[in-house]
Amino acid sequence: MKGMDLTVQILLAFFLDLLIGDPSRYPHPVRIIGFFAKNLERFTRRYFSNPILAGGITASIVVIGAFVSGWTLLWALRQIHPLAEAASSVFLIYTCLSIRSLYDESRPVLNALKQNQEEQARKYLSRIVGRDTENLNQKEIVRATVETIAESTIDGIIAPLFYAFIGGAPLALAYKATNTLDSMFGYKNNTYKWFGMIPARLDDAANWVPARLGGALMALAAAIIGFDGKRSWTTVQRDGAKHLSPNAGIPEAAMAGALGVQLGGSSYYEGHRVDKPYIGSTEKEIAMTDISQSHKIMFASSVLALVALMIFRKLLESNLT
Picture 1 (cartoon, rainbow, N blue to C red):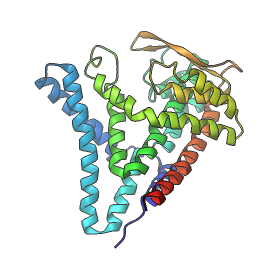
Picture 2 (cartoon, one colour):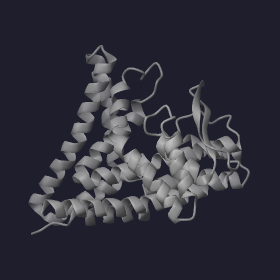
Picture 3 (tube, rainbow, N blue to C red):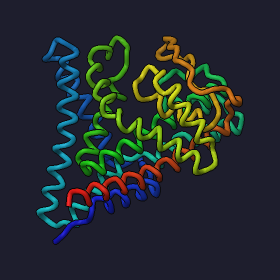
Picture 4 (tube, rainbow, N blue to C red):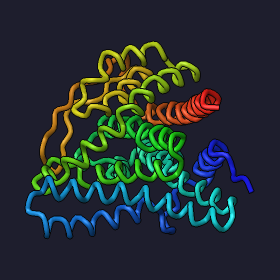
């Protein structure tokens, strides 16, 4: 019996994510990946004195393990019934997407700001960013939230979709494992400066194409829903490469240009000041409404990415047949 088409699986996963998001009380594969990676870190640090080597071995095992586990599970279910394989694939791809959870986790920051509860807003913000939030003022809270929404539009939405369309659930899981490793180990502190080097570079490589594709899609999405798409794209071209990360500056520039605000500047991480280049221009002062505006661009970019990648896959299939 023929199974469900991969494009249909991704569509179902996309709408499942929009519908239910990321419930906190079920064994999410990404949480399992994180648990495995943390325990593997202890093992590799114990048996390999070179932290770069230990980090590289950890990253290799986790990423390859995520791909092989996904592939093996789907293969086993296919022996039972093609629809069992398809249902599992839909679920696995859904767990790699973060559209609804990105909205659900950033929306409380805006709600708290609307109620003049800056302390509560900083608390909510601390759950979704790596920077110190204790002393941020309102504009800095908004800036951090908008930057996070912009960056996560790539690594939480467009990149998983990109890899799902190329290699189905196993490749999407491998990407998500790569991204999880970077979020766990990609810090330049004493603990992870060397151990996290290979995981961070691996994440940079995995996001290189999705970030550039995403920058163009975000600018186009902004234009479609009434923002300044032209300014968004020119800001990507002008400021996209300024960021310390080879990829993060692109979606930030697309978002900054679309909204007409300036992102970047100084932030503190574990008490250490990090001066990031400014991205965008001060067409207007950043305000709390920019959080809800960035949500609109994020949702529009997600739909546009889904449609664009569907078309790309269909064209690719037609050329191969």
